Length: 285
Image (cartoon, rainbow, N blue to C red; front, side, top):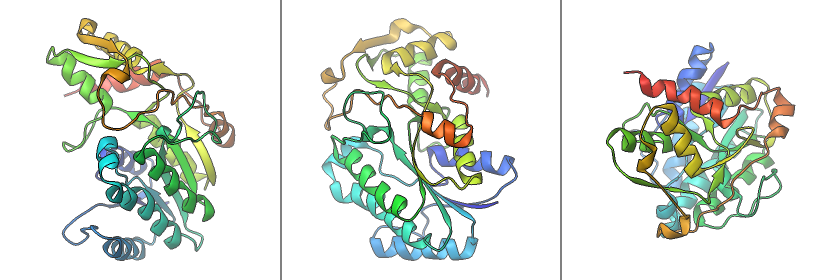
């Protein structure tokens, strides 16, 4: 299958592209460049049109997003450009039978979980723009995957939650971890498998894609430290309210991902399984 990945040089994009290639797909990546600066709506539309015409893909996967939550809160136009306008343009370009997969966020959930797909309630600019960006994809018959992920980064410009944790542990730095924020993330390798499955099956609709269970971010950090024999005394368990963050954050992002599992045959892993799988990569050179 010929696949065009927008955001191919990002944190998830680098892992996904490699995964798709190893599975035998013809993978084309799109990222910002002097040829494609993508600073304005006009530049984005022109660059995306050229990329799709050149690659002539069977499936388009969008990973482009403004993900810095506090920056989104301060700069709504930046958040809207990447989180709303980008999926809108891709939805228009993919209307002629071209399968579109758009990766969204578990932060659209603002109330108590576990959440099914109907429970979105954004509480900050980031989550609001991510939710708005889902609508054109769904209206065009595409697939939206709400998720959260971690794992060893393959690009120096982006680090994951687990990268930050492991770096602190190895450098013997004390860090704060939230005991009242719950989530159900996947490792990037497993998420790439789920995305490939959605592409192969030409899945349409809205789906949560997360682990079979959930943990607090403090417990997630403790489990990762334990798996890699790092000093868990460096982890200072605190409430997110004490962190002084610019934007409000949801505290319960637990997802029920059974709908995706039933639709695709995907086996939902536990968080411990995902930590074990991703931790091995931090032991490699």
